[in-house]
Image 1: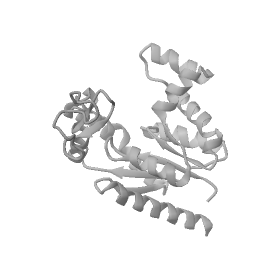
Image 2: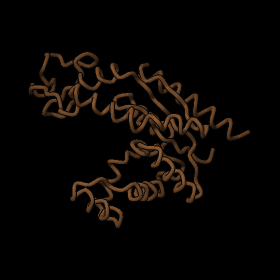
Image 3: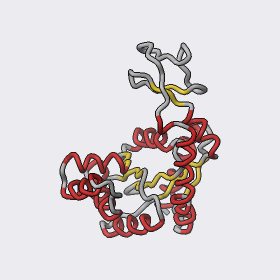
Image 4: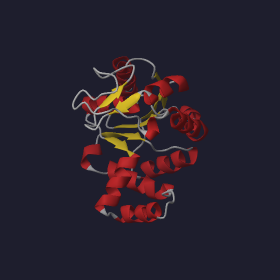
Length: 223
């Protein structure tokens, strides 16, 4: 397979970031998180970055066309020559249409859309259990607790729960995901690009399933 161009789908807390990191190590593909590359374009004062900043400064949403343009600039860089992992965009079917057409105009195509799913209650427990200390180290009250409850192992500072990690906020984020992004599952399934993975499994097990799916895609490409 000449390229491995993947879109990562799934609710917050399903494990997309963890799997993206593992796949980056496996295949050398850049993990392109749209929020990160948009901020980078603004910081670098690219033409698209300047346009995006005007909307951001006005408190408005950055238009899809600008985000798509920033993505195309990013996947045109040398480290994305053999493929990429796109995370955070598209979020809607209209965005998926726009992105797919733009990528095809560059002579490339998507290899697959990998969905990592997890029930809401699992996601809420994962995210709402996070705590962070002044050192920046992140813990989980159930899965990775500190040695002393409520204290950072590194400096003894009080651990806090970020506002984004509070249960009510997580449930609001999940509601937005269900409303806006879940339709992409059927969209990419109809295109024959969707592959499903159980995000309730351990990270290594999910990773093994994803690697197996990639091997299958590579064999199909060779036929």
